[in-house]
Amino acid sequence: MSAPATPSMSHRQVLEALSGLLLGMFVSMLAGTVVSTSLPVIVSELNGDQNAFTWVVTSTLLTTAIATPIWGKLSDLFNRKLLIQLALIIFVGATAAAGFSQDAGMLIAFRAVQGIGAGGLAALSQVIMADIISPRERGRYMGLFGAVMALATVGGPLLGGFLTDVANWRWNFYVAIPFAVLAIIILQITLKPAVRTRDKVRIDYLGIVLLATSVSLLLIWVTSAGTNFDWWSVETILMVGGAVVGGVLFVIVELRSAEPLVPLTMFRDRTFTLSVLASIAIGIAMFGTSVFLSQYMQMARGATPTQAGLMTLPMIGGLLVSSMVVGALITRYGRWKGFVITGAALTIAGSVMLSTLQYDTNFVLVSVYMLLLGAGVGMTMQNLVLIVQNTARPEDLGAASSGVTFFRSLGGTVGVSVMGAALGTRVADLFADRQAELGKALAGLGEKGAALGEQLAAGTLPEVSKLPEVVRIIVEDIYAHGIAASFLIAVPFAVLSLIAVLFLPNLPLTRMTTKERLAASEVDLATITTEEGMTAGVAATGPVPTQATRRGRRDG
Image 1 (cartoon, one colour):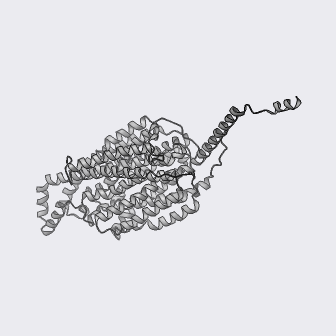
Image 2: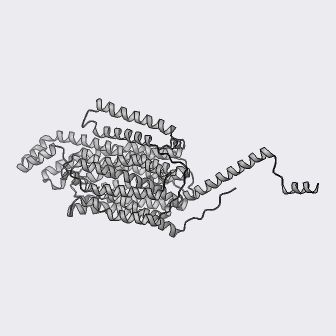
Image 3: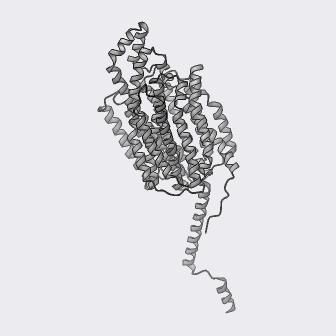
């Protein structure tokens, strides 16, 4: 028995359903990008050091990574509309609270809460999108997503830099609030996601605790080792040992849980496993380089926040154009693998070239390097989620989609932590090597030089654009070498991404949405149940009499 045709949504219905989702995505992206160019100024005014700068970014990525699979699993159990509205409230509430931060520690704490909401928006937007748009048709709507991404990723840094230069950096955290309120209202009116009811809901609380503990210990160790304590020390043994034990217990609990947070059976699917490996590498390239590119523009080239936003446009443009064009081509031709392989290769090229940066590298070359990296990330990032959604079971769609997003966020978190730790160590060594030269430059500035020397000795990030030229050139050169060395860390992971996508099964994209696949699976289940019941009846009472048999009995 074949499944009845489920009426597909019209183009207008899809646009109505997407309106609130797109606005929600815009809010989450805007709140993240608006502070990207302002972070050096923010951390400097809050008297934070390079470690604090890294943790302002890492704290959000850490909680986003932990929260993503939790939200994804909840989306398989509860109403997705309510969940994404709740994620928006958490995200924007924490973002607004961050604007009242009085020191770096307070800012890091609110950014961590912000990541919980961001994890929900990242996971749920992918799941809900699959509810209403089939993988094959996704490219048709990539123009809308591209426009939203363009507005947030291009306008966010520019707006953040403008608000910081003209008003105060705290307005970076308040600007998303009216958009969030509007998004919640529109989602309530327009969104009707697929709902799969379950008789009994079980939440894997132990799995949540173990995952959060093991990931947190690992990232705290990566960020702090070599700075707050030695790489080989009691702290290292406790943190790494705790992370390993927590990871092993998490696997055991997931194998025994009725509703596992991350169904490990998904790793039997080669598409899911290879997509996860590729996503880890893409996360490192995307988050790591984007975070430290902004710092390079301000710390190594003396740009203001507004100028830094403008200077990173080539990477953002490459990401947006490649994702939109490739999405349209995938919808038109139904082929995706060649684009993903090309994207992985471009990611390698961009990462290698960025690792050669100097403070005076010709900006045309810097723009080409950023463009290549952005194009590579744009071709791979969303398509890896698309590939997994294409093969995942409808009832596991939330866990599968959030699984890929989780490992991408985890890769980005680890990448930022490792790159930040390497940058901090390298910059400290370079300052020590050039102490005599720097001391001579500061001595010629009198009392101002003495105060500046105390600031640099304490490790506080300076506002390079405001430094005297004789000191600025030395500081720019130091940070350029340090940031370039940190970019080199992303290269081996980009190579791993290319290897993973080369072995991805080249399966065709389905034209069925999640709603249609759920309807088809329910009909198939009902058919199987009916056929099993008929078979059991035949076994108990003999063959069911046909109309001809009954007529023969009456005649006899």
